[in-house]
Every structure is written in C-alpha cells, then in structure tokens.
Image 1 (tube, protein in one colour):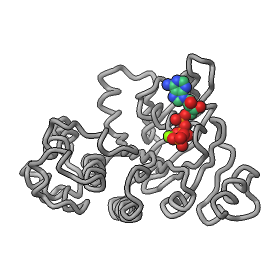
Image 2: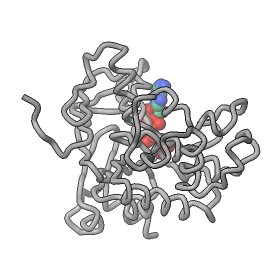
Image 3: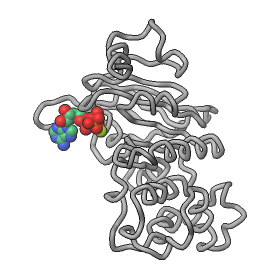
Length: 261
Ligand SMILES: Nc1ncnc2c1ncn2[C@@H]1O[C@H](COP(=O)(O)OP(=O)(O)OP(=O)(O)O)[C@@H](O)[C@H]1O
Ligand SMILES: [Mg+2]
C-alpha cells in the first residue's frame, strides 16, 4: 500500500568521500515538503555543492538513500532512474555554463518538455497545443521578451540567461528544484530581482526548492526552514523565524556574526 505523504523529497545518510579520502558530505539526512523552500547555508568548502551533485546523481554517493515522495531512487534501474531523475531540476551558479552556446534558446528551453512528451504541467494546460506558445509563455513567466527565443545564448545578458535556466527548470513542474548559488555570478543590481522571481514562482506554482547559498540574507529571504552545514555535516536546523534566536548552534552564531559585521 502506498503511504500518502506531503514530502516532495527525502534523503537519508547521504555520504560522499572523494578518492583523496576527504569526506565532503557526511551522513546528511533531510526532507523537503511540497511547496517548501529549504535553505542550506555554510561556509565555502562545507560540502553544499557536493551534496547537490549527489542529489542530482552527477556525483555517485558512497552511501545513502533518496526518495521522490515515497519512490526510492536508490537501487533503481538506469532507464527508470533517468525518467525519475528529471523530477529533480537544477539552477546553478553560472548561467552561461548551463547553456550550450551553439543551440538556440527555444530548443534549450524546451528540451525537458521535448523529451518528456507525456508531461503537461498544470500551469501550461492552456497553451500545451503549441510548442511555440509554451515557449513564449515560459519566457513571459520569467520576464524575458519572446524575441530572444530564436537567438543564441551569447545574445542574452547574464540575468536573462539565468531567467531562461529558471524557465527550463520549472517547465516540467518538477518535484524538486535545486538552486545552487543561483545569483552568485550575477551583477549585484539584478541579484534581488532574480531572488524575487524565484520566490514568486515558488509561491505561485507551489514548487519545492533546496536553496543553497553562503549568503545568510538570501537564505533567510527565500527559505521556510534552514539547515546549516559545516565540514560536510548538518550541524543546525531551524525554522526561518528562529535563525537569529540565541538558541542556535555556536557555528550558526559564528556565521551570523560574520554576516552582521
Ligand atoms: N572532485 C573533487 N575531488 C576532491 N575533492 C573535492 C572535489 N569536489 C569538491 N571537493 C572538496 O569537497 C569539499 C566541499 O566542496 P563543495 O564544492 O561541495 O563546497 P561548497 O560548500 O559548495 O563551497 P562553495 O560555497 O565555495 O561553493 C571541498 O573541500 C572541496 O575541495
Ligand atoms: Mg558550492
């Protein structure tokens, strides 16, 4: 019998040790509810991106379990895994590196839906009859004029490219979107606009996010709950409103004092 759950994603004891012997991720467990943004903060080198890469199956974990809702991802055959894996999308730090310079924006934007022909997200129901209309609608959702659909990545600004990456990530209404420092390489003047866009989409579409950053202000703005990572381990976890409470772990307080100084 399938148990009904409000969990979009769960991982248990995820561990990654590099061949040099360094344990970058050490027994990390958490869940993300449907419609929830879980923040992950920690200093540089604490293992945030390695954890993200393990969840995206870009890095092979040494130990651990992962579930999309109740569906286990570990021990799955390759074909099934590839299909389920699309339910976890990512927006990474460098918008240019995430796009192929030789492929037109429309084809990169539509790639997830072109592959998953049987998927029609609820928010695209009214335009689903036409690929072009879907592409235009997605561009509108992220605030990029549709004339850019026929252009190549070098013809877009960094902010516009990241907006396209965001549109592509939401296009199949995935169970989870991993945002790894999505604004870190953008001009300061547009970082807040991109965060606002991500937050609006999360709220209006009920998306689930793992939002990774070393910027406490950004994590605090975006997240419902926050995990704090140090040396590969989750050392503290709290609701957003309790982040600045004096009950926090000494390492969290250290991060806060650096942030406030
Ligand atoms: N392929 C690799 N081989 C060996 N060590 C690695 C590899 N990738 C990452 N590491 C190490 O794992 C640790 C965690 O790196 P990771 O990139 O996950 O940190 P991070 O928290 O994302 O940092 P940042 O905030 O700078 O992005 C670091 O000590 C890093 O040097
Ligand atoms: Mg990182």
